[in-house]
Length: 322
Ligand code: UDP
Ligand code: MG
Image (cartoon, rainbow, N blue to C red; front, side, top):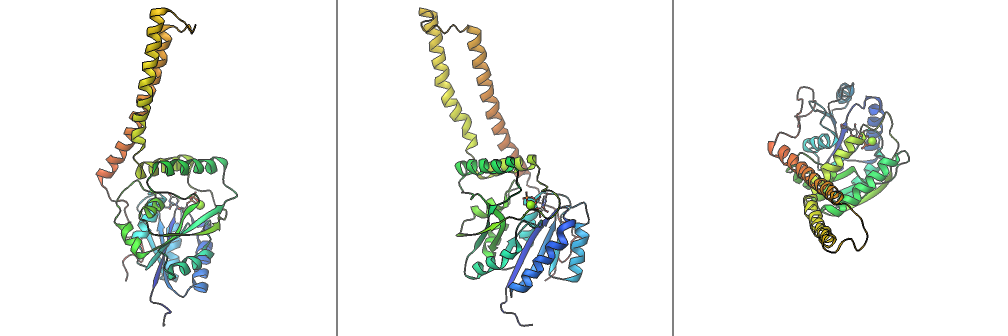
């Protein structure tokens, strides 16, 4: 069969217990790929240690369509690592990552590809609305972006999702990044190049609940701040710079109090001063120790330098072909 182009597109989809919606997702994905693109493709499902029949279903999809590949991780490593594994496995001239829950509209893929063929190296889906997101998540994510853009060297754009296309040149650079505590889109942004945005409206999840609990999201936020920025380490120094003159001031008040009595009629007892000061300073110390601890724990996991993930080779299909 003569192809319009000798190019290969890799579609990377992390899946974790998605058996209920996966068939529908896959059908819509294949329909779009067949209808709107003339480019050959491979679809890599990274099974992130699902405990349901997700892997079995992907194996069935593979037996019907050899373009489907299953990369099975040996346990649940989390979405960021699963996506990373998929990007590592991709053999295409460009890689498109998206979620399997139907929230990233597959209809956008031809648009992504069009931009890529026009020369864009990074194309990013920009989420403009999501009706069913809770207040906590909405304002939490606002706060997160505000914080990270203040602290980190790279700007993260609010609404920029993991639904994105990267050219092979960027994929190859991405493979060289070895850190464990990672947020995939942050790393891709760090790699630079001109970024192009395609706005879309997120659909509600097809089935089930988002598996990201509040605590998981919180950890992800902390991870991203720590991995992209070192400025929290300086917070203690700044606080110290404020506290020192302040305590000198309080000391002066005490001296005045001792020498000329209480001219302002504050009537504060000596022990109250001590208690307030101690509490304050202990608080400052604990916070700064905690921040140092966070960085230390990251240094610890990074220096252990374990592999990022483990692929269950026997459970995977299509991994070593071609
Ligand atoms: N996912 C994963 N590992 C996990 C959690 C989620 O691979 O530990 C996948 C999930 O199957 C889906 C995508 O990551 O394809 C997005 O997950 P979800 O919808 O739960 O999170 P959201 O980002 O929408 O809050
Ligand atoms: Mg989702």
